Amino acid sequence: MNVQAKGRAAAEASPPNQLACVACTAYELNLCRAAAERARSCGEPVQIDQSVHIVPARRIIYREHDMHDAVPIICSGWAASVVTLSDGSRQILSFLLAGDLVSTALLFEPRPNCLVEAITDVRYRTFKRSDLKGFLLRHPDLFDKVSKAWIEEKGRSDQLIVDLGRRTADERIARLILNLAERLGRRGMVQTEPMEMEFPLRQHHIADATGLTPVHVSKVLSEFRRNGLIKISDRSLTICDLAGFRRVAHMR
Amino acid sequence: MNVQAKGRAAAEASPPNQLACVACTAYELNLCRAAAERARSCGEPVQIDQSVHIVPARRIIYREHDMHDAVPIICSGWAASVVTLSDGSRQILSFLLAGDLVSTALLFEPRPNCLVEAITDVRYRTFKRSDLKGFLLRHPDLFDKVSKAWIEEKGRSDQLIVDLGRRTADERIARLILNLAERLGRRGMVQTEPMEMEFPLRQHHIADATGLTPVHVSKVLSEFRRNGLIKISDRSLTICDLAGFRRVAHMR
DNA sequence: CGGTGTCTTGAATACCATCAAGTCTTGTGG
DNA sequence: CCACAAGACTTGATGGTATTCAAGACACCG
Image (cartoon, rainbow over all chains, first blue to last red; front, side, top):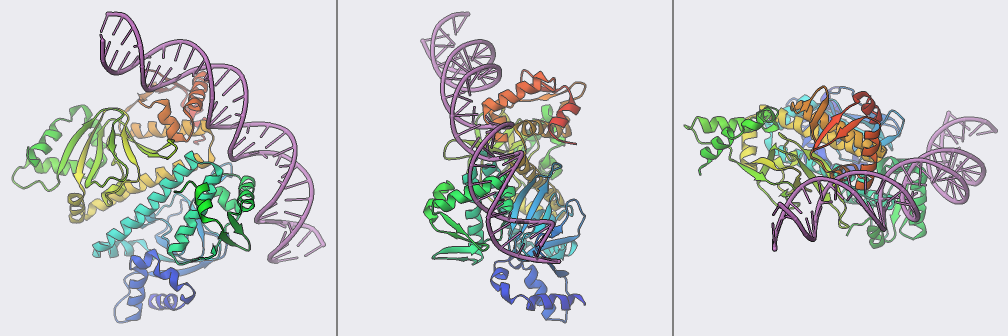
């Protein structure tokens, strides 16, 4: 299968995630679009190599300290960047949603400092770093978009540092959920009245992201439910009392 | 005072920090050097505006949410990026040493998401963002250096997330000290046999950086001293038992 | 059908925060 | 130069939050 064919197959196989693709970082970066357009107008050679991969839930997408010249972008599904310590405990650095670059650092550096793990089934696309670099140099207007992605990524890291350093378990969990809701909202993936969204995270994912134990996460979520703030069932989360929930999260 | 004169004055006023300047990010980025060289060869116009500022300890260098077109780089002294919450508690995101860009995000975005505070007296230099951007575009080979600074910054954020999420107070404090020692070492600012360095941090700085309380920091440091791991006196820190200290930090 | 993964709940414990009192240093204005 | 105030650090007592340990319910899957 040559590159053009791969590109086209990917472009045509995406209807269930059209919305996600519009919100997609890569689309914003003109990478997928550029690749698709090149593939369509078969006359000229494809300049950006890309390929689509599908990975089942719980599988590792990207291993720590591996060298890769592939830069992955999530097309659909949820994934997480994870650091594992020698004693087996884990810290999730960020959740990756449809359209997210796995890490902007990978645009420049082949060695990630964490592994990336699929939470749901994940479809992702990879670009060759060298192609990407060349593409960026030829289109300097795209730098603003890259730097925007970078700044957002850094902003979320900084927020997480503050949350882990200075907030209680209730706040951390509520903020995590609200942040995810906001990111999903931007992708058109949150229903309103009631405010409901897909929520494939297991409690241990929440624990690993908030620096808590699964046991305590369970207790806090039960408390939230008892207070009528949220409902969780069937891998779907509803925020019943947004104002109250934001108050718990200390987001004013 | 015109721009050339300012540049030259700065270049000639730096003997006490020559070592720091060699390790300086800006020097690596060729910014200070470029500015100095331009200033020296008065024939052509200086293309990168810069100015030097001096700020006493405890003063704020850069306020949150201000808009600045200035990109600051620390020339000498210690500073910290700090987030303050509404209840008054604080989280230090990173310590800034001689040669550090205050934040690589500021290269692209005028609005920092934290404030920057001088810990000691600080001398820093600011560049105009627009000049800097132009300079970078004209010298694409510098991108690697920017991206390297970028990646290192992100790596440290990620480390801090793991430390705050998954490590005990002892580990956090020991790791903070070892990380600082390593960064100072790269700048030639650590003496060996005994391993001693300047250490202007107050215990409340350590507390704000590790997500602990000053009281608890005091107790942990006392414990470290009782165990012969470190000595602190007169704004100077000695690591007496490096191997033991690294063991406490779980750095293998 | 056993096995595995997920979640819940309760009891005991550990870690760190909070409160409080006191020492010592640093800085400042009289 | 002294007196006083503010900041920095220490130490002990007490309390709260989250962890650890343990047991059981439930769903899902090969």
